[in-house]
Amino acid sequence: MSLEIKALSTGLLRTSDHVAFRLGERVLYAAPNAAEPFGAVANKAALVTSMRFLNRNASGAAPVTINIFFVRYDSTRILQVRPTIRILPINLSLTSGQLMVEDLPLTLEQGDAILGEAGQANVIDYVINGLERDV
Image 1 (cartoon, one colour):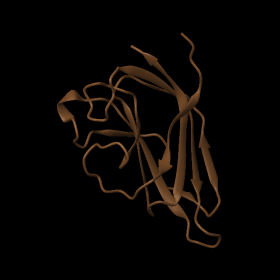
Image 2 (tube, one colour):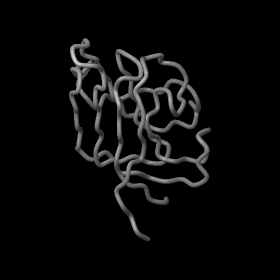
Image 3 (cartoon, one colour):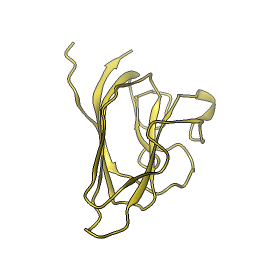
């Protein structure tokens, strides 16, 4: 079996709504788990090797804060708010055009996830890189 580092997830951060646990809202990436409603057909563990966040706001716009969290899988809380563990400093501020890279490895078991939110919707571009393996 060959493993290669690839983009696991890309997109734009949304504002904090603290609603249900749904991919594409606060959930930036979830290690595939067939029990989750994200369409996974096989369970996988993941190693996140880096996360990049870029403020795409026009020059001179106000800085935007971001918050990124780790969430452990919990089968009793499917589609519900789950306890979070902070990955980045609270309310990390990015100015226009600023790039932030977090490259400390993060291991995720099947169903574990990375959540994110921004002070302004659709201006913080993100890429989560890593690899997945069958469990």
